[in-house]
Image 1 (cartoon, rainbow, N blue to C red):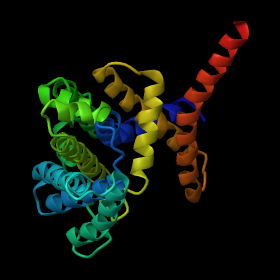
Image 2 (image 1 turned 180 degrees about the vertical axis):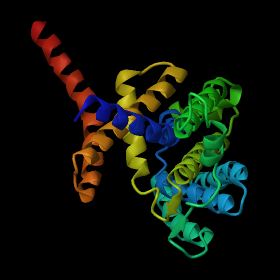
Image 3 (image 1 turned 45 degrees about the horizontal axis):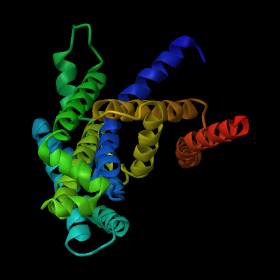
Length: 302
């Protein structure tokens, strides 16, 4: 592989990582801050992609973004209601919503499992025309990815320092303490999941418009990718709200780079899920094994 090829792979990985980093940041909010493992991520991603694609196909590419986020908020609300108001276990609630969204997504796509957007005006094609004959020509995906990730990080950095944001963080750490402070943890959990799923749906919407097509299973494996990216980022950056959010984006890039390199070496498509699983295991076990080895070394010296 030449250096030019590697740079090309790096740019492709960065573009995909930035678009998918919104899902990682969603898990940063729900999993790291709220301490809720939301397994509806795959379905919400596909739901947002489908809604965004259908709105763009209707001739409203700019409206597709808020429409997709609204769809994600609705998905997050349903998941939260199942957890907080109906007594359904958080993991089971995510699985139920994820399963139900499969049918909802097909219904949104008018009964089809695939929608082609090759001749559709999207936010990417609009920006491509705007950047024509400029130094950023042909870099519309990178620009939209950077801007989107930056805005979400900025939002989280500000929001998680507000009173409501602090309540959400406290809910993840100690819901009993939050309850004793006259704050309803059901409300904070609902707000957190609604916001997180809005980011996930936005990620799906942008990815669908970037690749000019959407399938019913476009979100397959996203929760694995997002969790792996979040854990990888946590290895490098462990403290600070903004820095940890940046670490999540870094983790998404590293994950996507490994994935892209695997594709470059013609790894069979059916092996990519195994690659994702291996990255998750490595992201979880390496910090643990390193810490355990350090502890044994310290004990031996003592």
